[in-house]
Image 1 (cartoon, one colour):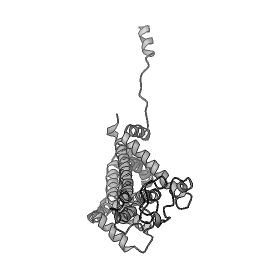
Image 2 (cartoon, one colour; image 1 turned 180 degrees about the vertical axis):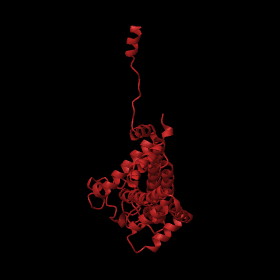
Image 3 (tube, one colour; image 1 turned 90 degrees about the vertical axis):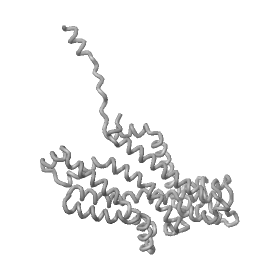
Length: 310
């Protein structure tokens, strides 16, 4: 009997190591090779965008390092030139370096795609949180307003808004216009999350102990609804980039000579039969960026879903 007790005491129980939510999500995210590849591409694009703006000279760091030229410098004697060592993507109709303009345009497109999501989070997140937490007639009023906004065609409303405020700062106008039509989905998502979470036992217990509504929202509701919100915002970035490209292609987006990818596609469309690369290269940049953010969004959705835990 003593021997059996001694053996039992020496058993090394294999207790699985406990990991936090975000650490566990990162482990699952790394298993998705497409998501990791998309994240690498996004990091490269961000480095390209920052390098094209810093230092504050046309072409930025890439011109100093002789990687790319000046995106604004014209050379009409070398217009629509084929790709070469000095101009990897060739030149456009005004002799400007297409490669330098693609690098510089990444800063505009990424800025619009990312910063618009902060505006969407501020508007949609606030409306959804207030509607879900307070409920009653406030919830009904805010959701009916959300339904009205949802009824308008997105692109048409963006066009009307940009045209109405065409005399203002164009970049800020585009920010506001895209955010104006894209906060609806996030508001509905946040409201649904809050309605579900506020009925949980730990939230009821915190409310019974006298926790203030503000602390309840900050400590319980917001952290526990972040997963779906992060995924939605990630998917919203390529949608905002595509909207900006569409507006610029229609001639009401970024004003030339600022080389956003949409502006470059619109400029190259007029000379597409002379040089297809003027359209192909910025279009590939738009497609690659949208695809990368989509892969990252898929990876985040799987990583932050507790049902995907293995």
